[in-house]
Image (cartoon, rainbow, N blue to C red; front, side, top):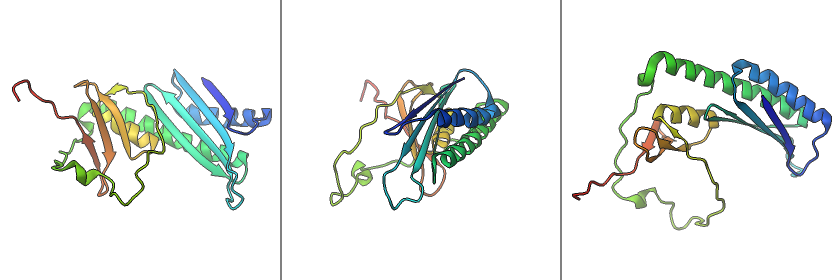
Length: 194
């Protein structure tokens, strides 16, 4: 198992590195499979009014899945402990979903029909709000099933997840709906006679 520890605008001491390695390795015993890589980034937020300036970001890559945990603490050791506990919970959740999917087969997730959007302008942000692009993120698009994408969205804790549908080869987006459940956005396929 590969655990990489780095600091963002902070120095990572040998004691901190050893503490991260020990705590994260203990958390990973829940679901010890190979290949598994772990990136831990330690940083401090420089806001004097923040009572928990220490931040630990842990990104775990296991079998085409990404598990992410971010925790804040009063000091770096407390934040590391909290992050290790969160990684352990996330791994338990991942392990449960993987086992459930194997036992129940592909019918484990129910796909609810998506409501048709007549006008894309309804989805846009109103003009009176800020309309500047403030961040660009490059992602790896991985072929997977819709069920696997639902597992990923839960593990990452994001509101949406972009993936390549392994059945169609097209880019799809799954997302959390405000009223509960999930939705999926699929591109419309045009037939040659249209």
